[in-house]
Length: 131
Length: 131
DNA sequence: CTCCCTCCTGGAGTGCGCTCCAGGTCAAGG
DNA sequence: CCTTGACCTGGAGCGCACTCCAGGAGGGAG
Image 1 (tube, rainbow over the protein chains, first blue to last red):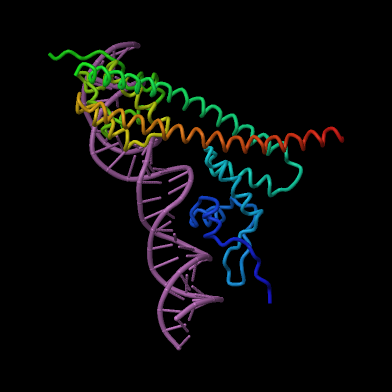
Image 2 (image 1 turned 180 degrees about the horizontal axis):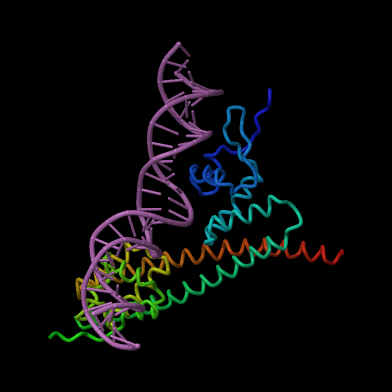
């Protein structure tokens, strides 16, 4: 009888990672993970620490705006094993640049919005002072 | 004979605002603008400075992540005229908070990615030194 | 007059990233 | 033995924000 691997259930994994169970299954189906998550005897997923660490990383990539398509590419590189570190690095660095640009843009737009907030605030203060 | 208003054509407006002509028409159809853009005798849109300024503002809101639904609400307040400045301000401030949270989150995730980049960089340097 | 370009409209289509569902299995608790 | 609950699969559906298209009109250049 094959022994059931220990590890987090999908609900536990979802909880720890801040994702939904549907998203976890979707990521696996879509090939974003490095391997198929091991199963218990009854066919339930049992997430190992290495699985959780990988998903944590791709969650970071995703929440900094990396499209799933690119996560896919990165996963393929890591799956391919040692020897392509330059490529992985290039991908991460390109993403870093993209994120920095985005941050700068959002910050600039936020500045203009803040300015608008200042205008409204002043106007409201003037009204309340004159009342 | 009614005189055609001067102003930017849709192509010029799109160009200045960094949007597509389709997006401009979509925004208008969807009620994101303060008013219907004036038309030339032949029915072509002629964007006035006030129209461009408004679209510039909502573009800033959009590119800081405000959903169209909320831009809609903001437009409704402004269209309603004076007297609801507190509400507008509340909306903008709430958005400001949301954006600040996002920025913090993205920055934090980027830090972790940078760490990863550092690890790869070190590894590659060690390889090239030992070569 | 004809060609061509830009614009018009209503409506359909697209890409992304999930999210939900029906129908089913399995193991534990009462 | 029966119910309950967590999980499984394949596949459909959804919300968002555009984006594209067919078919047509106005106006200037040659």
